[in-house]
Image (cartoon, rainbow, N blue to C red; front, side, top):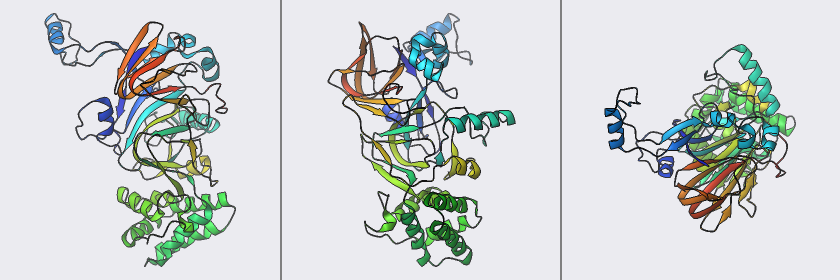
Length: 439
């Protein structure tokens, strides 16, 4: 077992205090959106190979000429770091990942664990399945843009199903509401004093929702919203005039934890003029209580709105965006990848061991609450993260204590591992052998 050192992502939608609170650091006003734990090439975790040195030790080292910092004086007091997790796994893929994982996923860690904390909505987005990811990655690789190019959709050849476990109240948009509910929501806008261009595009959206099959109607409505140059004007006008709220039970509220009028107001406040706000009110809105979990397969259009949670996914960074963002939006790819069938959100319940399964066998998440002694469930390699209190991992006389914000890599060839203490522990592993589904 090895303690890990992980990367914080400072995306502008992130909250400023939740992740620092978990890590035990002082917030400085910088958005801290995600903490990545895993072996994704963009930001792989690194192994800690020794404790942090005191300032006095560092100063003594400098006097002896053992300077490590590029500025000539070693001042950092971070733990001593070894190889990143990709490099470490390459040394013994079968022993560290496990035979079954190696056969199923190759010589890589198939999952990525994150702490996610949003103070405002993330982009409306969708992730590809494995075949779409392989094809899209090959096309973009051949075209030549760098992996970090702003218009790049496919950064790897992997699918990206995911699961979010709420640590706080957590709101999300996921999958399409029934067509009748969506149409009724847009029809509520007809009572507003809209200009002719806005009325025209609104009429086109409503007409699309009355025609075709349900999936085709929803697809066509999204296409109009995202491609018609008059849509930003409609968004602005509806934001000014608002939509009167209606009681629970009204058809336009079906599939939404709150009135879509509230969702629209929130989205337009965060992203003025953005057509994605109108796509957002087409989606189911879910309010997760702490301890509840939601999973999304490839093809499910979604957006997280606000809250803090533990997110686990297949180890991929493939994202196709459709709005609520200043980043690249690709309407054509979105239309190709998205599953436009209406359907209820897929909530996930843990089993008796605290295990939560996603839609594929790339990952599973175990949520443990000590003080009772727990067996750490593993199907191959695992990453453990302590989010509260202190938890000690034990394996045949070897122990590793994790305090709040600390994490560890557990190799597949590690004997049985137990967790004890007083705290909360999340364990990411594969879903192999669980019946989670094919890849």
